[in-house]
Length: 260
Image (tube, rainbow, N blue to C red):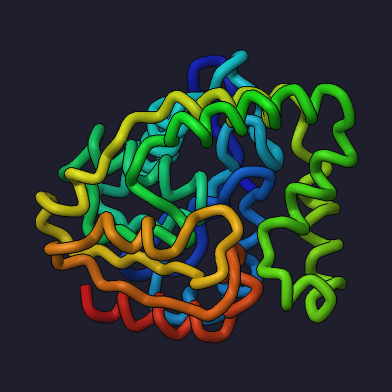
C-alpha cells in the first residue's frame, strides 16, 4: 500500500503491473481488497491501480459528507502523483458513481468506463429517504447495520451458498468507521444525475448488472442505456457480481480492456 496526502487527508492506494492503466474503485462498505481475486489475471497485461475511497479501508475521512466529486478528486490526486494521463475506470456500485464524477471532471483522462452493479442516475426520492433511514440505523446499531446491509446485497439464492464469502465481506466492512459510512451515505444521497455521460462520451463503456439485484431494479437500471453504444452484460444474480459471478466478470473485463 502506498499513500499520498490530499487536502490534509491520507489517501491509500496500490499500483502494480505494466500496460494500459486500469483504476478499480470499490463500493460502499468495501475497500481496495475486494479486487484481490482479480489482480493475478488483470496484471498479466495491465497496470492496475486500486484506491481506498474516502472513509473506507485505510483512507481517512475528510468531513461530514464525502461527495462523489470529493472522491473523484482524490482519485485524480493519486493519478497525478503516478503521472498517469489516461485510464480505464471500473467502479463497483458507489465506485461507479465516483467513476462517473471523475469522467465529468476530467474527461480527457478517461479511456474507457465500466459501471459494475451501478447506475448513472441520481437517487430517487424514495432512495433518499432510505439513505436517511440508513444513517439513523447505523448510528443506532453499527454492527447490525453492516451485517444486514452486506447480506442484502446478494440475491436470496446465494446467501447460503456463499455464506463464507459473505462473512469475509462483513469483516472488511466492519473496518469502515461510522463517520465514513455516514459521510458516504450523505454523498450518495446528494449526487447528481450523470446519465448524459452514457450517451455523449466517445470512449467505450460497459454496464454490468445482476437480474436479481436487490439494490438496483434490473429493468429500470437497464433503461438508462437505451439508444446508446454502451455494452450490456447481465448475470442472473445479485448486486455482488464480483463474488457471485467472479470468473465471468474477470473474463468480461479482460476482453473489454483488450479491445481498448
